[in-house]
Length: 142
Image (cartoon, helix red, strand yellow):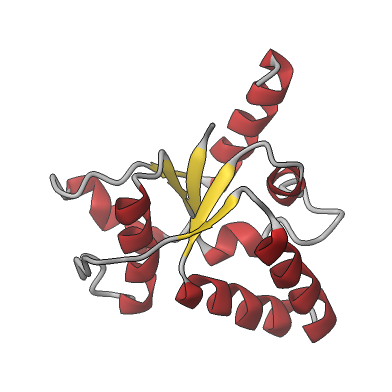
């Protein structure tokens, strides 16, 4: 099964039912891929969804995520501190490394520094490309 870490911007872009990226949350809730999170990541999801939508939406999404079998809480033992411009983003990198995720899904340019890092190798995928990947997996029957 596909294993990913979703940056907060990937979650935010898929919350609205009218979003072209709604497939990201829909496929997650359908159990079609696995995501890896830490408590800090989950708290950030809740905070940012509340700021951009409302408390009820944030609570509903975070509570639903907490119940899913394809959401995996991950213990992070290494803090690489690779993103200096926005140190708060490092929690996603460290989670992706700790979980051996196939992809870290983000449109945040701060993560581009990872393309020049030999270790740890974190595969980045843009939200648009992840949407296409999910669509192709659905079409192929995965």
